[in-house]
Length: 177
Image (cartoon, rainbow, N blue to C red; front, side, top):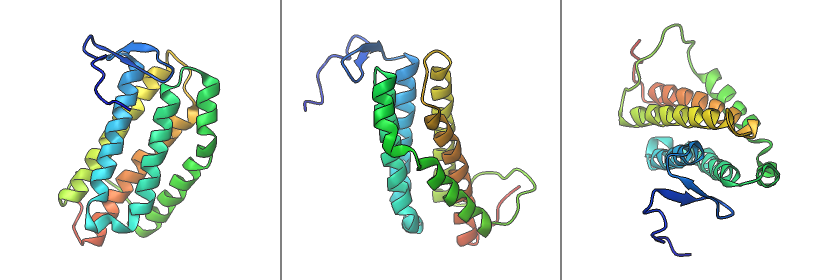
């Protein structure tokens, strides 16, 4: 597969099936935001302090790639076929969220993100996730998007928030409120 086709030089790009869309189209914005999120999660995996979460993070990246394949699809039927294997994905994230919540002290105030570089990256990743969620919701306002994608992105941002808190706790870094 050739990477550089020079087909995007006019401000258009192709999605699955060959349909050409402007690079500023809401579908392309959603795809790009999820792609950026996949990369940020890859950066998180590079940190030793997060190694015990690597399997879940790789699973999340694969899930997001499936979602992008579904979003790039031109038909609802094709998108549904792609997402068959993703049916349990939200439950997996919710279990991870519950597991983290049981280890963390209650939260009574807003916290200021940070504590160390990894925690800051986790919070940046969470914000990128929320942006991706907003882009997909915007796309959903004009084109029917599988609800699973929006739900998953919402839970993923929650998971990332808790992951940042857990890393601070594990490293004995006090949260700033």
